[in-house]
Length: 409
Image (cartoon, rainbow, N blue to C red; front, top):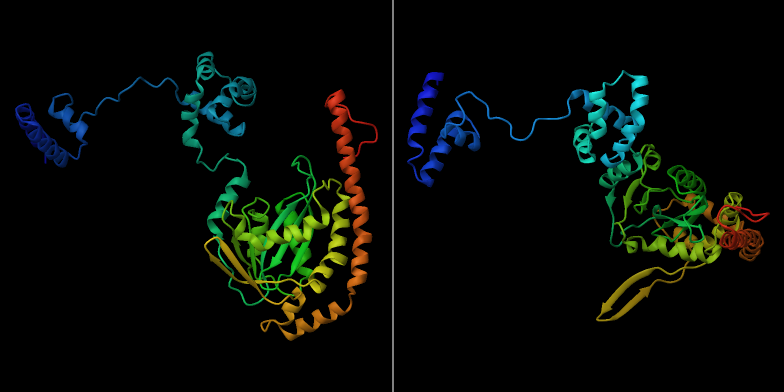
């Protein structure tokens, strides 16, 4: 359609538009929209002779106050200052403008005035289009990585259906003494679903690197291969360090996670957290880094051999609920070692090594060794607790800054 034909068509519609009823006007607007490809708002303006053919509608609202010069400076300082929100960016601009001039170019009085008058909400609007850019966006990797891994790692809940050892639940136990401040020891707990075999490793802080070191230490002494790793949603597990360790090996580990805030999804390892860790080490604060190796030695030389080779456990095989009554059935008591030896899926060579390993231990001697190694650990923890109590009493009486003589962290 030529421009003249378009003009004649539009003039004809304009002449007939005022005399139409509501339904007729709506049909005519649809016809103009289909003919010219306009939006309904623009077609209405054209039919009311408010817009000429080929003329664009005027943008509503006030004219923009901030030009490209102001936006460039605001965005540049915003990126260099770790991308704060508008409320924090406004005072940041006043502090950074002088340094920006020294590093880049002189800013005119008019531009400086506009930048300093910019409201926090307007600063958010100016920086919003740049939040998705890769260049200069640093951010904090932990949250984004955790979110990505939560999407990639499958959620596992419900009863396990495994017929051989190697599928393990993992969790960490904090030894902060009820406080999360500062650095302190943690325990990594791995429990095999099929046999109940449990491994422990002391960690210093809950980081991905520490967890990987603990798993490496555990894998060297486990009598079977690690096939599956089921953890909770803590940042000590959902990180790139552990991802590389589990998924980039020759035979990747099946990695799953529990549902958030659903502790029953990891009932096996939660039980071992109490029976194998809390009942042994208690709830005190292990705030001395030397305790890490002392506890690891306790685990490896006394506690774990005693529990895995000589302490029988019962597995729940059936649970029936009738109204408010719950009936549970368990299998015959066996040690985790015996359950491995009874498993048909385990190689005979591994079973033979396990029998030889068990023959090296004596349960009475292990129990005595346990007490001898545990006593100095608990004495050190008691000393730390005493020093914390003295520091608290001193702070209550003299203020937070001072500490008693001889205080130990």
